Image (cartoon, rainbow, N blue to C red):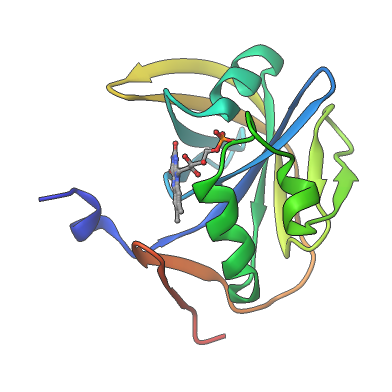
Length: 158
Ligand SMILES: Cc1cc2nc3c(=O)[nH]c(=O)nc-3n(C[C@H](O)[C@H](O)[C@H](O)COP(=O)(O)O)c2cc1C
């Protein structure tokens, strides 16, 4: 049995990252808050992901929270690699600059965390990045996106 059969639904986010002139977006279910003070947040990135190379080098990323309306774009970013194409261009998701780190954010996101990596831990086939949250903002309250399985999602009541 796959572990996610028990753990899902999990809130799906879009992680944005940048190294040199490469900006990328990946879809990610495995993320969690860790501490209020200091504000710490963790994401788990698979070893085969292009985003892993970018985050390892830049030590920064943004966690973009999205509404159920972005389901199609989220699936695209979770099924294509930034090695082969520009996911901003392909999905129409728009870039805005993060304010505290050198990294793009997604304009359509309902909220975000600007994160700076403080620790990197190998965990099996993934790498866990523990980060300090440099800026957090909730822009609008909308129904969030939660992953059930495969291409099926659900949402919150409000
Ligand atoms: C709903 C969903 C959730 C995902 N969650 C994760 C995750 O938590 N960690 C991860 O490494 N990959 C996850 N993926 C897979 C990556 O998003 C996918 O491999 C993507 O193509 C990586 O892009 P990149 O190579 O441009 O970094 C998820 C995919 C989907 C569709």
